[in-house]
Image (tube, rainbow, N blue to C red):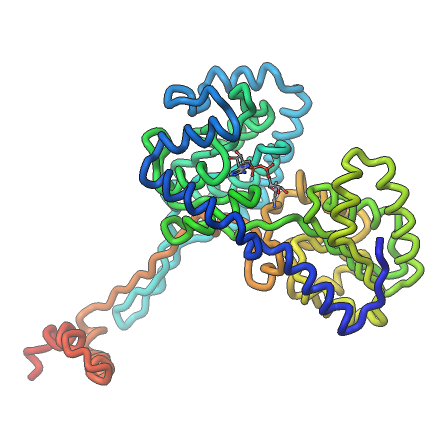
Length: 432
Ligand code: NAD
């Protein structure tokens, strides 16, 4: 891996290079995706099936796009029972964590005769996208469906592409059943997103779409945003390790590679205050790459976006961490808890030598659908919050309104909105 001394200039070069990975730069696919979205919106199933035949499965038609109970049963019969057990253990942790995120309605009354509040209501329906083109992600099934169900969403629909034979990976189907998906459809890509956003003859329209996917999925989510709510648009995976001389170079190298294997656009960055650690990590990375199964993808992503930055001070290192605002941040320093309190921008923060990133991907409980491409500056992980909405509640008695009605009328008149003023004044006509 390339080792670079951290300076204002080298940091800016790195930030400029990382920006190239933004979905905003995939302009060449924008028109293709917009055309797919528009066609599904106007022609429904006809376009949905046409594109599914083209990209995924030739046998698609209206009678078999929905996964049946028999197919789910077949998945349970096929899957290794140990994987079902593992899915259940992981599900338990994910549920426990997301239960804590639940928000409750509140109402405040005053002796003056007012009640103000905030009523929390779950969205009526949600659509979850689970990618399935190049790999399978039963873990993403759990991370999408659990927060929706805990929020109280009554109807959760899932779309995922199937293989050429029309089969969805059994682990994905089992995970969907265990997490509580109400319906699963065997469609993928931009056409699946458009179908959930606008509804087709076979797929219901939903209020919110969440979940990661490739560039076609990401751009389709962008295109339907506004017609439905979406979570943040996921770019390629990222890991940033912040380490000092106390870190184990072999562990750091292994963790960097855990994200580099996702795809050629993934980024793996070490920011360290130790030149010695930088050199050792680089050596360990070279040794690991030779033996890992996805060595070609890893080598390309390290060539593209793999960096080791050597900082003079921990303060410089933390400033850089905040500017990069990584999806995943590991802090492996003398006192990671203290350092964590100083960091402002990261999707998920892993503390210490034994909290390696895949712990969060599969098992610990927090959501693994995280902001990428520097958007951790203002976005949060997918959570129960994504599946609720809030209504403001306002109640004033006659006496309470009487006390303030002149102020409101005055304010409304200052905006020259006399009908507003009148709607208050009309209630106190008898005072004049
Ligand atoms: P996918 O399901 O996102 O995409 C497959 C679909 O792409 C197909 O169904 C097809 O409809 C469409 N497609 C393929 N080629 C097309 C073309 N030329 N024109 C129009 N549409 C086309 O699966 P994938 O491709 O394997 O991508 C999954 C992505 O999701 C990866 O980038 C992976 O890193 C990412 N991911 C992210 C997370 C996360 O939490 N951030 C988790 C899992 C996966």
